[in-house]
Image (cartoon, rainbow over all chains, first blue to last red; front, side):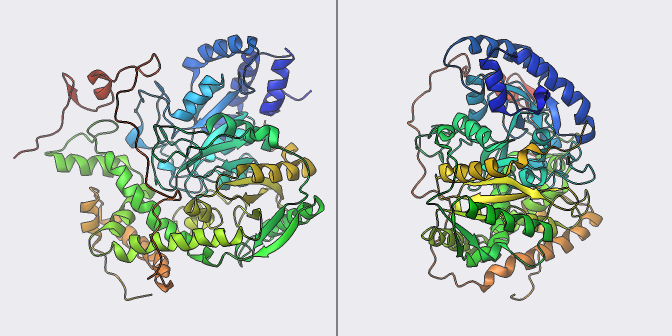
Length: 487
Length: 102
């Protein structure tokens, strides 16, 4: 029999319903698994052992009632960027190492209300700035498929935890690909919802006009289930969209008849990994077989997306991260003669290299004399990229593309070349600029047995269509059944 | 690409309230220049008639009603004690910082 930890959320919920296992048993087995596997992967920054018993007994009580959610009693891992009341929330930074939030992020409150068990906080690139989870103050996370490679980032801890069966599902955040790219590199399902779909309250800000929380799961069904739980209007987030949350799980259906999928020429570029290209091309054939009509589309401004993104994201970050000044919370440097010196010492010692690089870039792009040449232009170019998609969606219902130009790369191979690292997100960034939903799902393996992900991109607030297509593809191919060889 | 921009990295660091060692500054300046060259690609674009886009959502941001929220067991009233609980330096409910006035 398959171990409990290898199951999906849906499977565990079904076992609970039939009375064949209990949250206590599931949590105990999972904690054993984590203890066994995590030291080699470093996916978790912290386990919430202190509050687990209380959460388990709550869930066991809730399961007795008839209307309990399918998430009730399910252990979920949470990226360490979401505030958790009474539990350290670090953003994988020295500057927040000892920060204990007095409140829960809205998504955490929603998960708790559904009876989900917050099992621990996962590793990430510091302040979500990175594509490899190597910039974490707590050391890099490794990819369960090949421990000498990165899990992607910035939600690499969540991706590694789910892929190695250390969590049934996880929350991540995605500013330029930070859910989808690690999902692709770790062979799991990663969903970045439409900007505004999921509350950002209690999600520590990196770039406020791009950040969006989402789900990382083993299957598309589980992704739909988690999205139902965390999505929805939140008066505490001024950019939260006042839209009803659809019952995504019950809308999933097999087959792709009557759907038109656009394939953008600009996403199949020179220098792209050959095995990735092969896997994605074969996925296109599968989609045809499932009844979809495939059309060629063009997104001509794609090549400017990375440049636009790094100006806007760094500018917003330099402003958002100004709050870390050593006064109200977080790290403070010891000896300073005056306030100004204290700010500088604190920030110089508290932030890592990549974070400082982006604060500098953003400060420069917003500074007098350069604002209109960089920030102003980037905001205009952002419009062109968004309009690209609007034009493309006149010809198709959703767009199919690779998630990442390469599979998982070796630890350290891009760390000293920021530009090379930034280009890892070339296919994911445009969606954040346009605010569109995107899902990455496994679509095969390279010759070296590394997972490949494909991305399905939808219109704003049309998660339903991409979840459906992803589900149909997944049911046909069942890549999710293949697991990394990690014991 | 327009003429090379000479960035005064030290001045930017000052504005950002950061500081770097001379070695760090050297590595950093080189990387910064490469990134800057890359992002200057957007200079190729014809943008005169394009409306800037600040957010993916149309329209102005919504404000919540300016009224006090009800406190519950999960969201208790914020106290002065809570406000300074995470502060690296505090005294009698106030934040303590190094000397401000010389």
